[in-house]
Length: 505
Image (cartoon, rainbow, N blue to C red; front, side, top):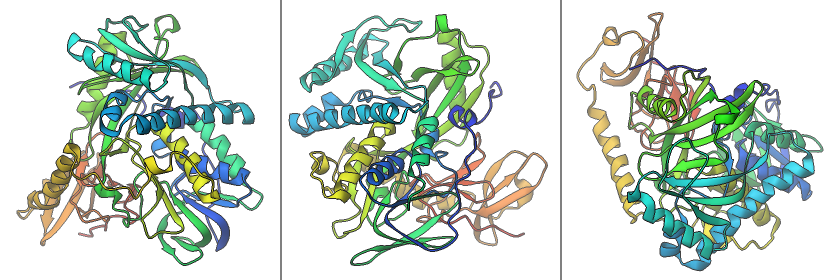
């Protein structure tokens, strides 16, 4: 295998300044506390502040460095192939609400950009879902028919600006793309001030709900709020059982310079099991081609370099790319019934709200989450509320739900037998991560390139699954619910809020 190339960082993060919002240093009180500094949390915050509420956003790391900082940043209601399935599964009324809400979210982003004069490379683009072979053409045609029935700006095409032939594609006109971090950091600056706050490097550990308010317990101080919104990809609170209604999916993106005359016009995604996402973005030195793919459930693949390699190979063969400037990965929670969960945390919750299950299309679904959650908190009737109700019946019985529930059970039990025999840390070679058992304790051990060993508990601090090694990212990933930890055990990605215990030899 060729060694990976490109800077291992999201282009969106690398091309924007580091943030310096304060850390929570003392107890405060606001109308609404929002846990998570991505697109859902920031959209909720700005809409509530405009309505006269004081808000506080609490981010465990740096603003917009989570999922929203690692997206492909397509702002579109074309979500690969979904509308034919929604019509069949939910009927025309609910399918139309899904279409209308995502179109409304697209226009809300455009409205913010115009109102705030945000310099974020926002541009209108056509979006395409394509099939390369005749075998996939029927689903494309069905999607066009369904989308037109729902009033979406769809048409069927057989030719695109891609440098390879396709059998056909569904095309949505007047969609958009942007630089997500430029957009969201502007919103964050708008939130800060006048009794509202943005806090970084402040981890929320728990939320205690009382009759008329909530206590947001962080690793620094306490925030008292009348309402609390949890927008942490997968909620850090387990009360709503969202870890059992979704599964974590990881994917990979590479970026490479491309001649504008050879670049495709529009945003593209393939169909079928092994598909790739394609778009361009203006770079300070020209134009950058972004290609994504290699998706899999978190923790299912340890040699993740191979997933990057698949994406690079596609870009080389299809676009003639020689060298790559960037590579990064991301993950999202996939909902079993294709709909996000937006609303009250549980049927008994009066003051805690949640948004999760964006299924890889977080730019519109995160935005519509903010629109819906702000309406719910302000007491405004929203026609989307029932469709996305976070307390709706859990679809365990779907084929995907059954498959993922079995997978979690197998990992929870079976992974405990990996490396069960007595081991020594000397067995871990340089650059390798390995599960070992020492003195009856299951450990996740990594030896760095300098020969130093880093050993931590292999038991995920969320719900006790055994973590798996991610070789490209040098991280320990939980295959059950998607928590990720650095090789030193520090939390990288929720729902875990506690680091892995460090083993002292």
